[in-house]
Amino acid sequence: MLGSFRAFTALATVASILVSRVDAIAKISRSGRYLYQDDGTRFYIKGIAYQEQGAVVESADNAFGEPSTFIDPLALPDACRRDLPFLQQLGVNTVRVYSVNSSLNHDDCMQTFSAAGIYTIIDLALPLNGSIDRVSPSWSTNILDQYIRTIDTFSKYDNVLAFNVGNEVVVQEATGVSPYVKAAARDIRAYLSSKSSSALVGYAAINGASTWRDALASYLTCDASGGNSDATAIDLYGLNDYEWCGDSSFESSYAGTTRNFANFNVAAYFSEFGCITSPPRLWTETQAIFSSQMSDVWSGGVAFSYFPASSVQGQFGMVTVDGNTVTTSDDFDRLRTQYNQASGPNSPARSSAATTFGSCPAESDTFAASTTIPPTPNEAACGCLQSTLSCRFTPQTSNYSAIAGELIGTACSLLGQQGGNCNDIGGNGTTGTYGRLSGCDPTVKLSFVMSQYYEINNRNPQSCSFSGNATVNSAAPSSASAANAAASSCISNPSATFTPSAPATTGGSGGSSGGGGSSNGGSSGGNNNSNGAVPLITDARALLGLGSMAAVGFASAFWVLV
Ligand SMILES: *[C@@H]1O[C@H](CO)[C@@H](O)[C@H](O)[C@H]1NC(C)=O
Ligand SMILES: *[C@@H]1O[C@H](CO)[C@@H](O)[C@H](O)[C@H]1NC(C)=O
Ligand SMILES: *[C@@H]1O[C@H](CO)[C@@H](O)[C@H](O)[C@H]1NC(C)=O
Ligand SMILES: *[C@@H]1O[C@H](CO)[C@@H](O)[C@H](O)[C@H]1NC(C)=O
Ligand SMILES: *[C@@H]1O[C@H](CO)[C@@H](O)[C@H](O)[C@H]1NC(C)=O
Ligand SMILES: *[C@@H]1O[C@H](CO)[C@@H](O)[C@H](O)[C@H]1NC(C)=O
View 1: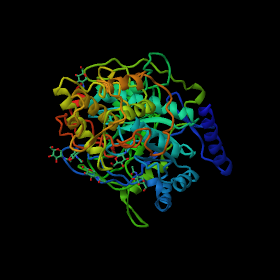
View 2 (view 1 turned 180 degrees about the vertical axis):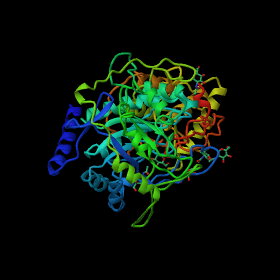
View 3 (view 1 turned 90 degrees about the vertical axis):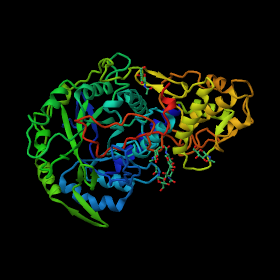
View 4 (view 1 turned 120 degrees about the horizontal axis):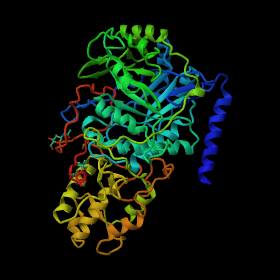
């Protein structure tokens, strides 16, 4: 009942926007591995990355140069209006935005772009604690809720082409994180469907050796249940591809990659492109990308980047901005010339495009991802548990993401010394095993481990202190292994998958008490992987993701090694 009511109101909102617009932007949908407008015309993404770079803290822990802050470009109406003429000169029809803040208002920018025929690809992740962490991964309530809040904020606009569930999360050294990304795709697909949203579910992959890159692409577009269902698949695969430099040619750059994707089943595009190793950038690859040599596999791409962005490889960006003044570069002029000449073939016909969702690639040495994917994060079950635990995390600071990670490590280590373990909060995407609490917010996981430690020590008050970070819950049941019993009772079906619903309160405490909000709580904060984790660089073809905002690090090694 509630679900169908929600779907109705969502439809009504969209309808009223459409009615009030004379010349509404066309709805884009996927058929087979192609994108089409309502009228059956094939659609190609002629895009540009559109986000000012956040602060990058240079350190050995941050090999990818991932920003730790972000500026939401779609919440700055004056800037959107300032930039629109330049986006129009470039001839783009899509902007890709890496992180947005769901509590801000985006009406002005979204409507400005929509009226100009510009779609958006919205990445759902936020820097640091708002992404699936490739070092100690989980698909958990805090990230799901953040994704849902962003979808709720943006699904009312008619120009959202896709929501990306991750950017460069999976890398060669961490293919075991893939099941968490696939679980995110499954739950976000179900949620969008429950809202009658037509936005596509996307993922943007880092480039790398085809041994794991192609397996990941198949994995994200296969049916994990072994049938021919789209329920666990993405619709739109993005490859961040920087292969073409100078005045190259199809044969010497994109040909191999294109051949490898010849039998791909969903829409694919370059979610970032543009040379990063040998300037100047000529953008002649645009001709190849929109040519019939590539159009059977690729539906365009997103040039990186409108705003200046720097990495160890140099400085990229089409414009510089000073207040209201935009200054374009030669790079801008070259891309404008190329984009304005490019138009992909209007074939094949939509009626001939069909998709099958085959079985998933087998696990291998180069792609160690199980087809058993994590359950849907269960806010109600985790909230029930948190309210019942005997010793709970009560941070003295609102900035607790970093200490939560550290304390989980400490608490698991202490518990381990007394014969316990942290299996319930961990998980392993290679073996396809997920602890009962793996989908809970890190603060709930921490409270659970603290409670086990407290109970194993016969409720000695000293054992529920953690240097002042924990408090005894006097209302909790007093049995010997109460935490364990609470987990069994609250999380009665740990492997359940279901259509998630919006968090009860926007940014609220989501049922947890004492330990801070489980829907907005601290999570994998701190980008310190001084935990002995393998540094995640080294793939020769992985051109260090410039726009990458996937999370790094978590100051705790113990609990992932279950
Ligand atoms: C979103 O914006 C609000 C209001 O400015 C701010 O308080 C909050 O910290 C922002 N959230 C993020 C994740 O940046
Ligand atoms: C939060 O704590 C981390 C590490 O303790 C620190 O680096 C960061 O600046 C803090 N952030 C805020 C907003 O206080
Ligand atoms: C991430 O951490 C910041 C600062 O600690 C906090 O304001 C924000 O709510 C957190 N976001 C999530 C999704 O946990
Ligand atoms: C909480 O834990 C952190 C990390 O271990 C520690 O630095 C801090 O002193 C503890 N106590 C309080 C009151 O924050
Ligand atoms: C990471 O941890 C190491 C060792 O504990 C410490 O020296 C370093 O300052 C930390 N870096 C950050 C960014 O917190
Ligand atoms: C997951 O399990 C595999 C196989 O047992 C093991 O090699 C790997 O180290 C585990 N990964 C993590 C992150 O614990």
